[in-house]
Image (cartoon, rainbow, N blue to C red; front, top):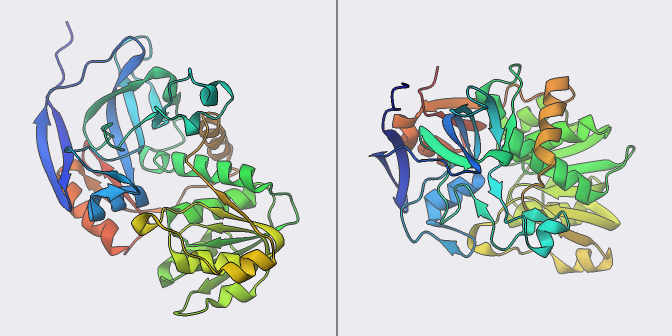
Length: 341
């Protein structure tokens, strides 16, 4: 007989900047789920909104919540016992019209890990639908695997943009999402990429990720706004980045809004957007096939996720990990529930 697992160690957000560690029972998988031993969780901008504001958009924290939706784990028990997996944090109903039409990312009754009321992955054990757990090659280490969901979103944004080889792209905001997007754009044949950020170390990281022109944004009009692009990706969730994107993209061009704004509002200059008759396309998450696509691109070497994980913490240091996230001092912050190595 297999010994029962130890109690689950869990980090729950109880309120604004109030993250607490708990011991809780190990969850029991239902018929369509698997039990996961969580190995790595990436912290992202949406986790920052929850932590810093107690909300994301118009969804507020009403009960203690486990954050974390960029994660990898190992299946425990059942026919897939021991399998390393990357996890799609979205669990749409698969029954509604949107799901049946291949737009499950827009499912109105979707469960999404780490978005209230569904607990996420900042814990040692969790259950999740087996169909959303995708086999992970040994060549992709768990910390880097947390960026596969980010790459999936980048691929979805590129699909929405209608990118073609020979186009020039602008990436405004070079946190982990913007940096992964730059790498994905290079993989699909975009040779000229303009990147901008307000932080010097992120501008350097944009260079390292393949941007051909990287600009340190300044207060007021960003110098990158004067560099024309065919398609623009706003990845900061800030009005200043959207302003730059609107001014830089050419007439009839498309601006992809990938970032999540603070305060649930976007503000952009109307005159250049109207005169150029721009298309504003919002991006929400990824679609189910995007995670396997991301895994294949990384496994084949077409996209590298190396050099993006700047800080690693064990679960007991999760509060410290969030302080590092707030500071914006590094790039990707990863929590390893079993302890950083």
